[in-house]
Length: 157
Ligand SMILES: Cc1cc2nc3c(=O)[nH]c(=O)nc-3n(C[C@H](O)[C@H](O)[C@H](O)COP(=O)(O)O)c2cc1C
Image (cartoon, rainbow, N blue to C red; front, side, top):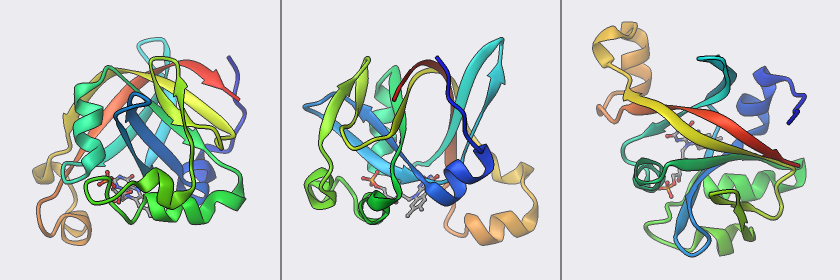
């Protein structure tokens, strides 16, 4: 299991898809906030999901999720996955992405790299503990993020 990347551009500039569920019933959305590192001696990924996302329910109810990265040709598809909700439409079809089974979860055939992630810990970030300017800029309606720290159990590439 090995994956070489520049973590500071991988999420922020290239973006990723966070998917949860199975091939028949799943949802995915674009994420650009995230981290990779080490916790409790394990390789981990951290993602931040607002409660309002349709994907939130899928990440909550499943033990696994995937974080997948794409060639630049799919930037438009990631834009669709990050602006439409799976509540309202079939995002996979609109984005032209093909879901595939990935370990105990789901990813997309078009992915360059898929991290298979097993949830270890999650909690809501607390507005009372944030700098005031962050609250004003990112949480004017109180739609906060829950963070999920997950063990990377496999890397498909
Ligand atoms: C570039 C980009 C990055 C995003 N990053 C995040 C993120 O890290 N966390 C989050 O909660 N939403 C993020 N979003 C917003 C969701 O992807 C977007 O609201 C999506 O439509 C949710 O889909 P869903 O309702 O089907 O889950 C991002 C959107 C874009 C375009």
